Length: 268
Ligand code: SF4
Image (cartoon, rainbow, N blue to C red; front, side, top):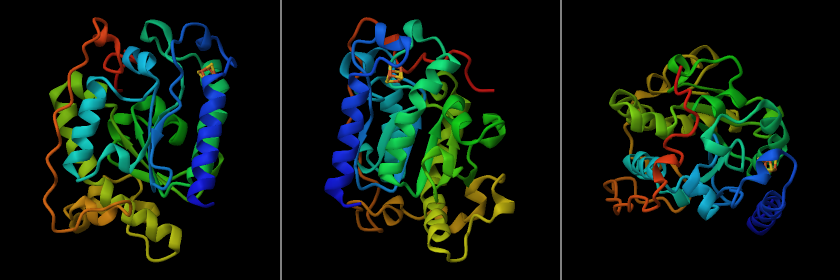
């Protein structure tokens, strides 16, 4: 698929999402949040669902959780425009409740089609609901920081899936924030492993290591500047991680109800 074909496919899916009435979440949304990012990226980040700021703006991860996500990406030299960011459900569950099973099922075809169009090399799940789509039965307390092959039925045939905590969970607990920075440091090496797996060259993430921390599978690569591992508009490998401009705190009076507090069940 060419760039133009991918961009057109993604926009077509986004238009369907914005008009979607497949589940009850359309009744309470202000804006659906299809997702955004580079159509040419190798990396797709999948969160859980929009919060109030996302619902207000129709964009994913624009509140405090989004600010932390940008800092996490910045720590490996990546920008949010380098990847594609979307969610499992595209409309905000009222009062930030967990989405119901039938709502997740109704929305699943959109994520599947987005992944088919993007054909990512690496999918990074953010939070246990997202991880549950790609690593059924896994517990995030043990699966975070690990990678495994994606089930082709997810739409990401040929990709590796790497699990991380949701940034909102990291905002609630300093230890999870610390672990999240450790985990994201392994993402570039996991992308390298995912590329090798796709190309059929020796795979640094061997099946037996799929349940081990990804950083341990390629420690040298994990410390490489991330720009070296990302094909899209990568900075020179020796370049220092660029400073990220501060992201303004959400000004909405209900900012506390954005993705920060979505899915109160938290990590397991
Ligand atoms: Fe449609 Fe998904 Fe929104 Fe439900 S959550 S109305 S299935 S886009």
